[in-house]
Image (cartoon, rainbow, N blue to C red; front, side, top):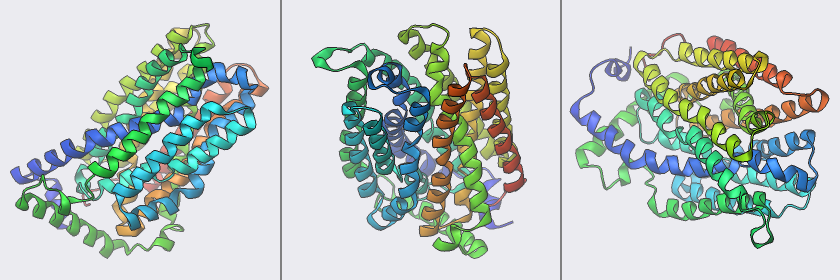
Length: 435
């Protein structure tokens, strides 16, 4: 067992606790706000569709394409974008990403039909490419490996929180229908897109690239953190000797990409179709947006607990597979259950598992990589995985177009969750006591 790994099972020193706490409070709340803006801009199409589909003449099959094509643009530029982050720095590149995606998201309000909307969704995905893996890579500049599941869990609170806040906000904005001659769904894209532009400018001036430039760390704190991170990087380099091109063909990275593809297929399929599942019970738009938020709030609480327990026990393999199986059970309940309460309960369980798996999963790709290879590897895994963002909405749209209801789509997503659990058991080591 290496020195870093041995330290992980001991009680942290006062200096270590102080430094990690400082970094968390200084970085995570701001990054959460950025990701909330990103996620709302990505998934608000699910709420816009409640009225937009009729206005633009979009059928369920076409909507599945339009919702999912975002991830094709995302896939194409993911790895190049993360390599640009290494070259230009996190502060500059993340700011560029946010400003461009905010403007394009707002431009979706002026789509004239299905074709123009699909083109804008593709460009939006290309603009946002690199944001999420860039943040995951950025966190490796600041936090030792033994803290990353809980740190990623705190960061990814933005995901369920954005889904919850986005549900409520979207319901309110849709009521602006007719103001200034614009439909409610048009106001939705405009109002939820422009904050990203503002946050992009703030990012350029606020974000600190790494410990060496953090004025809020005392010299001894800065020295401890840099030593910890350099020791871990040297150990990974010694064991794995990662190179950028070899990362893209490494069987472990390909397996991680496939696992994440299955996870994203499930999560995005639910996020983009859940409002319509609830709406199928005859609920009003207001009721749908309020109920749609609840599974995500519950998932947020569960995700933080799950990430802390995974870090504490280091049994990432069991926690990853377990979360996937929780998701599967919820989807089966939602698919085969009768009545609104049972179906909604299944969706809540599915959301809990779907969010709990995320921080555990993202401890893994970076555990084998350093430097530019880590940037490329994390982006590669994320880009392959986000093809599931296309597959989930598309398959659910297709299955709904050939048969009424959502049973077939939910069963398909349940199968993806089981496959992710099995592949995780094969890929992730049983116990990880080293960095």
